[in-house]
Image 1: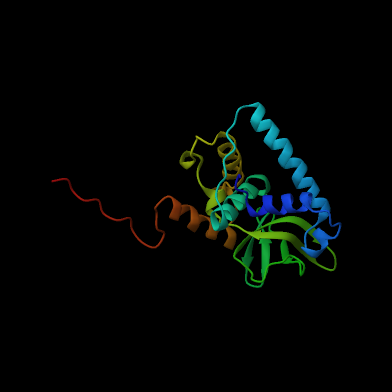
Image 2: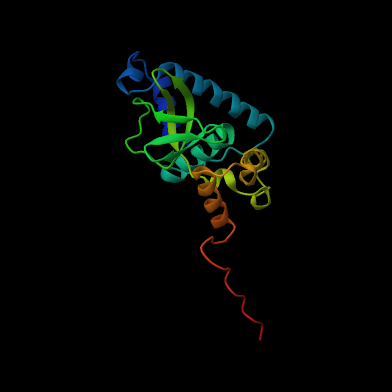
Length: 197
């Protein structure tokens, strides 16, 4: 028997279930599950046709991190940074608030969002936490073995050309992250190199 991830388990449980209320009682969208099942079948058949190995990225925290990294590849333009009590969207500096139905019980520093909702005030909805290191790494540091993923991350890195941005809290935060990734520290002179004996 092949192992399946939590998301696959949901899809398999849903498709194997005869109960029409299964998705309702498990707090998931029936339409979204059917769409996910369809996309999964299409991807699997494409991978088989092009002789690409079907490989799992693991379970638990590692799997969730990989899913969020993949989301950053497609939604890197929809990232917001928390400043005081509100979030500010990257690049266009739009002040937004987490929608009450977004599902997060905390307010992380960095979020990626799918929907921008304008009611009495601007909200972001369908939100997940992200690590800014995923979208500010330089294209030189990207592993070229994963070609498609690398190209998407390079697009994100080009989009986040933070040196050209106006001075702001978001820019300073991203510069700190980039410098940390590059091994630089902004709080003093660089360490001295040891002389060779």
